[in-house]
Length: 389
Image (tube, rainbow, N blue to C red):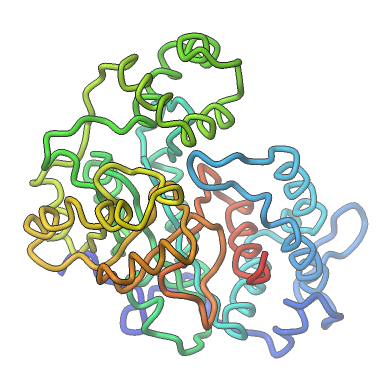
């Protein structure tokens, strides 16, 4: 079947999955062995122990990593983390040493990491900055680098398979109904022989147009933030602050609907069927993408079920995986989702999966358009950050 998984039975490793005996001490940043593969930078040797020590320090700033769509980021903090990673010696030793740290951490602690993507775009295409976008070739390279350090497995196995492995496990997820899921992401997934889960709304099945945040992205791209802010009657803000303001204000969302008359390029029933036939898993993301945290229980119950049956009819099987709109949820919402029959539910909180996690409040990480050593270094940080961070 297309979309065969990289797991225990079908691992493709570009590097041997060796885990050094001093793995735990290196990950924890305590003194390790002498440098096995020394490189000299600024006249000094940078070894695995030093890298691991700096990974531990980077963990304490991990909340400054790129955050989910429509959430406020901290550019100053991200810049600090990048400087920290540079000082740690990642660029001196390259991905090989980082891979050893990642593998050691996963082997000892059983950490697993789920990545989330939104739009995969063609080279040269632009985004308004509201909907996260990753260029095609960057996405391809990210998958290649993930496979260099671990295995890409189905999302469901992240919970059912809890045994410790020598290589960390990763799962790929996509949110919303972008046609690029089918046209751009799917061919690359098949090329790399991996699977993914697509959390869909099924908007086209109901004759619905773009979500308000898709319209806002289009408006910003065509008119710029100052003009959009003026039309909405709000102070001029940066892109992410504008998005956050609109996320919390249904009135502004209605204004955006009026301002933009663009037609969505959403997945059709044929596209969704093609994803399922290719071995991809289909989950639900709600039909209207409303922020659930401010809704009463009965409205949450409606939001997590309206449109689900129509999606199941297209896919041909039960849809029992859920992703929270805007990545936000709490214990009350998780309980409503559990009662609706979903076996797991995923937030936008950027953290790895650890033993004992609530299956209805699991985290995912959106890397954004980063690749190379920086991408692998950020994976190391995500796998090693403390569970409470």
